[in-house]
Length: 109
Image (tube, rainbow, N blue to C red):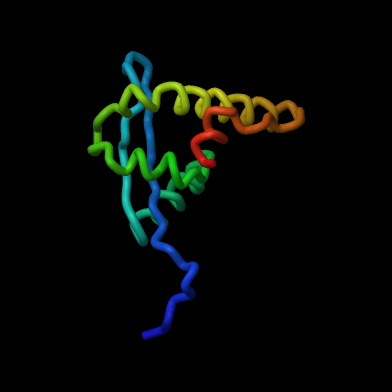
């Protein structure tokens, strides 16, 4: 058995989905360790942007699968989704990438 570095923490990941007609995004996958790695790998394979926010993931890990995110997270998730839309638009047009929204930056402090 190999020793893991002290800074090697168990990774968490949460996947959200939002469909037209839904009131709010839903947690469609969540996990730790190898499951988290698989969630991230599948997202990257599908061309889905992966945003790293330990605080936000921690809050979303408490949401049951196939349940909507809590109202307290609506604003930060809405700003994150809008930011991702602007990133995709900037990448297509060659424009500079937008800065991370303030609500998301505040969460990670």
